[in-house]
Image (cartoon, rainbow, N blue to C red):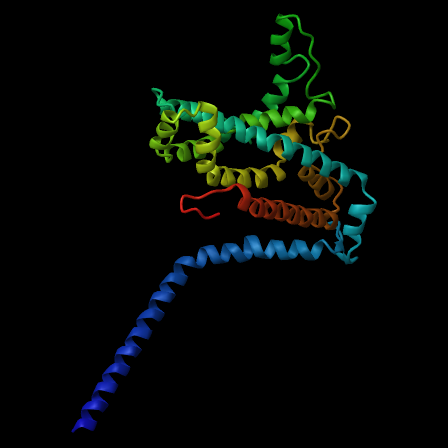
Length: 317
């Protein structure tokens, strides 16, 4: 009798386990069904093109003819026989090195002003965020080129006070910095994130430091910045990645040439010219993978350095 009971119990347990497995399998199929559009997009629109471009980077491919395998020749030519490649790297490093910190500092200053409880905060946030929505467009870049031109609005205002200014976009000494200025003007997204971070700082910390006699500057460097460091870290990584890929502003302001005298020849613009102006798709693909590696290395460097300056509430880094 006991054996029969045990057998029945095991049978029921097995049936229950089978039903559980069947139910999980059904749930997994439903999950895969919902994930299918994303998985198809990942394979066809991301992984597929990436692997294809990796293969093409080792070939001589001019679109009109089938790709011919050349091994590492594109990469060797890039670093040893192409002075414009080195020039585009220098221009891009200068642009990133100037625009990213200036943009973050400006965004943080504006966020601190908006965090002081002024009336109409939503309106100000919207006004300051609009340039971020419009700044990457062709129309805004063209308007910016016109405004900073020799007979543009800026020079007209300076002429009214007796200052004769150069053509900012046609002078190789200033052309790149006009693009930097356009980038800094698009500080809205970083400002919104900084503002959200500032609102998470308990006011008691600042009040206690003020009671102890700490001035505004000291409270900023010893309270606000350490607590805000994770937000600064996030904004820094995002702006770094975005800046390395800047293209539209340089293309429009320089009329697609990277001039004057290659002073605005950003890396992405030179990559575009190699691929779509000279039809050197193999070389352009190699440049694209070098850009991926560069962004990865700089991002890794920021992550490594974060151990020294990013602080969290639980004391971890």
